[in-house]
Image 1 (cartoon, rainbow, N blue to C red):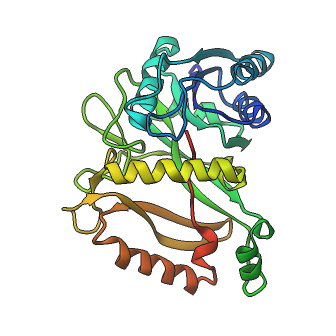
Image 2: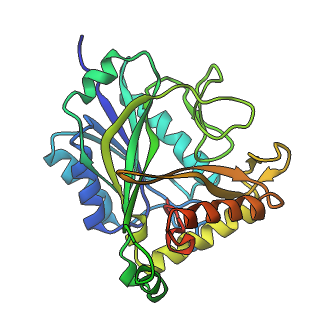
Length: 307
């Protein structure tokens, strides 16, 4: 049985060239070809259709040096459909280079692949499943923020946590992003990733021994503020509103981490979308669960990626 190729799908905008080099170099541990899509979301503050020219050059040069094929796309204008449009386009562009039985690995520029199991591609070749789950590892230095530093002196502070996430998807022609940036649907309507209240996700291949460092907490202050401004605009306009996970009726415009567990490798949880009315109660439950485990909820706030 021949091994499938893996096509990396990288979304980026206005990133550190050093971070991009690390992301692309690490992608070569897994990917045979890299598709990189530039440009800001329409609602992103002061966004443009393209990043600095040195960023595209770094992606191309590092990918080539690592033996990967590379396709870099710059849009004519900003992504009017924001995250949904940009990520859907990544799948369309991936289809140009994908072959039957290939897989996609979705990447952001704040991610670095650390560990890859030796039989990774053999697993992809052997499975009948269409999605795969890896592990994200996040590190947060409490001393970069006075409030967090104070909390870390009052309770045990792990400084990092891990959680499973789906980043691997079979290269099915017509795979699309629907409703919001974390809902991936096949042409025949199967849910490969998402928090739908009326449809179960398809089963996923266990590749949780493939470890990816998620560096979002290490972004500079200006970039994190721009991201926060974008998320506020995104949520206030309701462009990605699905249905509330709790009441199954209201429009979901907030997210809450639930089912917190402290395992040997760190904290794990799953994130669900909720409406404005249900958010206070579910968020309070989430924070209470964290305190029971000995963690400060304020110190674990997730800010997300910026592009």
